[in-house]
Amino acid sequence: MERETRAAPHLIEMTSDIVSAYVAHNPVPVADLPKLIERIHATLSEIDGGTPSEAKPDLKPAISVRKSVTDEHIVCLEDGKKFKSLKRHLRTRYDMSPEEYREKWGLPADYPMVAPNYARQRSDLARKMGLGQSRK
Image 1 (tube, helix red, strand yellow):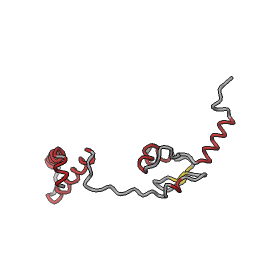
Image 2: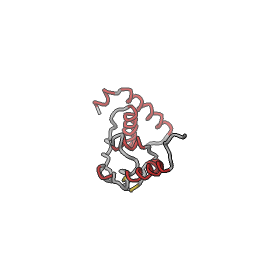
Image 3: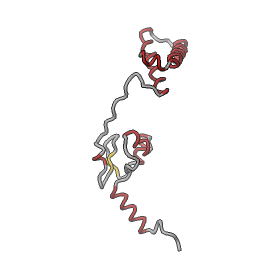
Image 4: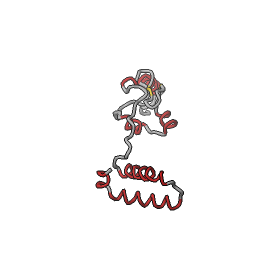
């Protein structure tokens, strides 16, 4: 805590201002004050870009990244469910874009969001329909 104090004195001042305002308008038992102060300071530290007082838990995917892509499906690292296309599931279930998903799990930018065979089928269908060809 001493290292944090020297690094960000403005956080201590902000913490005391917030705690003072909160306690002035809300009944808080004396025994709960240290925890309140700690939580407010940790939140401000996190917002400020510092290290929060409590370490974030390590992310553990539902399946290994290597096994998450097969020819027939993509497995969601969040919940282990299989999909032909992962984008809609991420948006509806986790309110996450493909970019956010890749960043969260440390995946490369070219990590697929669609199963390879499904992408191939859709590509073949588009070619048969004449999509992508110039009109004459």
